[in-house]
Structures are given as C-alpha cells and as structure tokens.
Image (tube, rainbow, N blue to C red; front, side):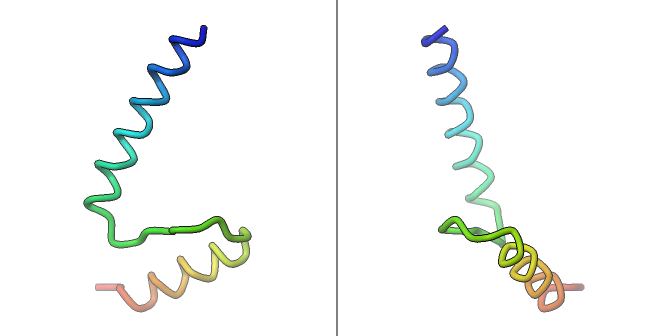
Amino acid sequence: MDKYEDHFREIYISAVKQVRNKSDLIFNEVVSIKDTTDYITNWLKNNAN
C-alpha cells in the first residue's frame, strides 16, 4: 500500500506543478475559507472579461 500511495503522491505533485504553471490565481499559503472566498471573489471581479 505504501508504494501505491507514494506513486499517486508523485502523480498529484506533478499535476499540481503543471496546473500551477498555467494558473492566474495561486494561493501560496493556507487561509480560512472566508478569506479564500473573498480573495477569489475579488480576483473574479478584477479579472472579468
């Protein structure tokens, strides 16, 4: 089971890195759900096309 978890951990890390390279919105720290919601809301308002 450990090898299975390690394998998927590496896949997850690789996927996150690929997505992060193309992302316009990146959170660099853990914040509350309210702060996350406020940040995303403000980002959407400022970046709406």
